[in-house]
Length: 177
Image 1 (cartoon, helix red, strand yellow):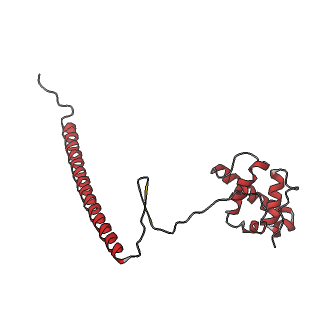
Image 2 (cartoon, helix red, strand yellow):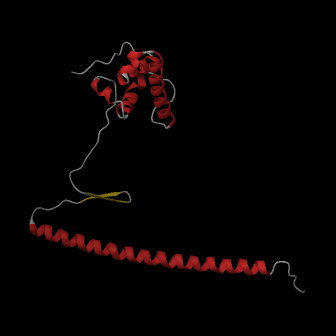
Image 3 (cartoon, one colour):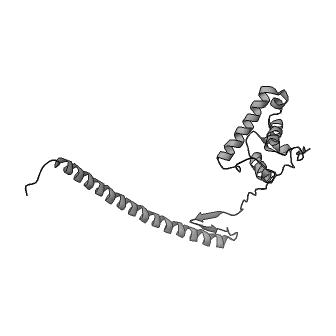
């Protein structure tokens, strides 16, 4: 049985914090006093931190931003007691999953269908192996080029260090003109 969200009672952020305290920390809320105040402070600090990190809109909550607020609140660890209120105003976030394997490379998506027919499967496997071999060769060539550039850079660095060393040795020596 789902509990009802009290839309008519919540008109300000203070009312919302009070309601959240009663839902998330019911024992502290009922005990009152310092414990209730500390529970409210925990909720307020979570809201302030979310605003600082940009997960919530800055400023006080208004009725238009409650959807985004509850979408955020439902994902918070320790706030699972909100899930018993099925009618809270919130946005829907869709998680899309694909059944086929996918390869992503530099902004392109290549979907690889796996054929059921053994002959087509064999042809596809051979093509994949050839493509893998070609990519391995290209990678080896790139790594060889990177190694050559690193060697050249190291050689220039050694030459620079040697020049700096000899430059320091000649410091203060005047040339005869």
